Image (cartoon, rainbow over all chains, first blue to last red; front, top):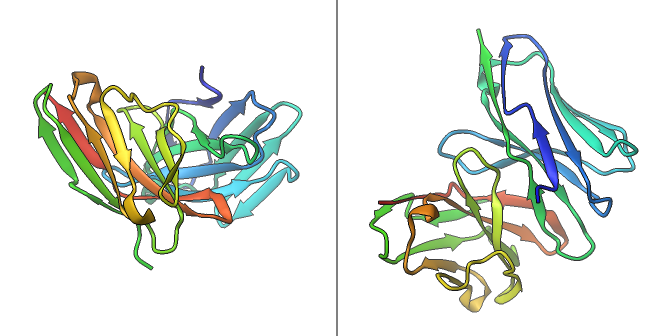
Length: 113
Length: 114
């Protein structure tokens, strides 16, 4: 049973455009929501994260929007660059119980010049 | 600060053979994780260690997979015997005790079972 659903599976964006990746979760015990960026041949790297008591968090060109009532969160990449081309994973963590990260299936982003 | 180290980076074996992967976490990180990442999917946790004790191995196929973390530092993940469906990238990650949720990943070992 997939606990974190991620969409779209792939995304093509023009350079300078906005990339938007969406995730939805079911388990209300999740209390930390990170996004990971993975380049080919590399392990995932923590990009940005948010807690459910905050509706938005911005770090540079990357913004997480969080909707607790809808149990959804999204990653926005402003002014997308070819160097942003990678696979992005949303994840969710529960501090009560398993202390595990549950990952979405990933979105392959391609930013074209 | 050195990151999480893994070896080998690539391994090709035939089905029914055995294979072992090694991981050295970030210095001082008490928690170590092994994940399996099948092509086109997100990482799936196999086992989690806290120091040298197992916290969670509920998703580890124990009939063929085993892992150990002697002395609470390095860890080894073994598969014996390997099946075709074990072809995947095996990722090691670590985190500090105070911030379990900030996990740092190694580059992974790409396993191909033929």
